[in-house]
Length: 381
Image (cartoon, rainbow, N blue to C red; front, side, top):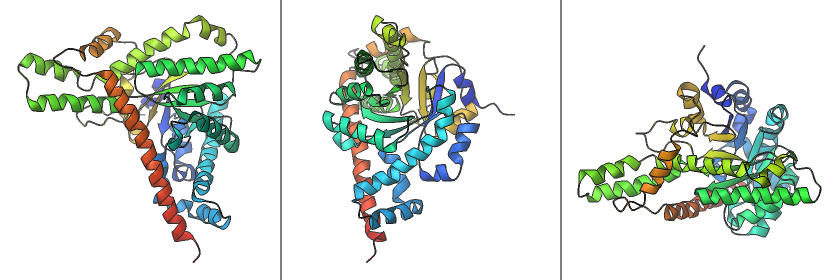
């Protein structure tokens, strides 16, 4: 029998979640099969996935028509469709949630990306989503932006599970981790149970390499003075995202060793795991599982799109690598400042964050437009 490497990964303390959710995979039994046969133990969703799922699929038409008859506006019809998919997925993953004692079995849904810069609106929508969907194994996705982090802190203090998304820089991850800790501290100070709250910090990978590789290719295309400079540039290609993630993991270790975290752990708090996101390899020259193989380690999650799940089940090379070559990781990031390379990683991270919000907003708006068109098509004349 062929080895399923996804199950091997679990032995190293990493959970594999899937970055995909549609009604098709719930109704067909595919999701149940992925959970039982492939070891998938969590799901994340986003506007891009839902846009593709709803816009071109008749499976939602009956519920859209019901929304039309009820006189619901397009946005509420959207919520009725998506909330039901999320509930069904939560129910399907509930056995995983129970058997893992609340470590896994979560389904993530994002608050509307159009409110990413509005702290109060984010808090309000997170509360409403959590209450209306009504599943304890639900996670609300909130961007790890400056306005997002106070929202994280507040909703954690209210007992809402949070997936902090769009993290690129190590500093943004550290800020996220402390927002989680402050939320738990506030809740504990009120004498409330903190043992049932979970959070992940979604640290994005392939987009970093795509951005930096593009900058390196531009430099090489313009021509370089000597072979030494060319070698320096080529040595960095495809390596920054993994190096950056390994450094973030070292910061995670420092945080969980801190007195403030240890005091919370003594009260039953769960660690906020680093979740590796954006893990499909964009450059065909790279291994299609490199963002899995290189970052397997204790207390982490890797969220994979369906194609990467299949690839990893087939040929991942499983070993505990998140703490290997850490010195090289620090050196590689430092080498970006070399005058021959001259790439400002902070500028790259700022670019990626703005781009990332845009990549959530545009599909969300496109989804609303597509759904509006579908509502017109299905409305009685």
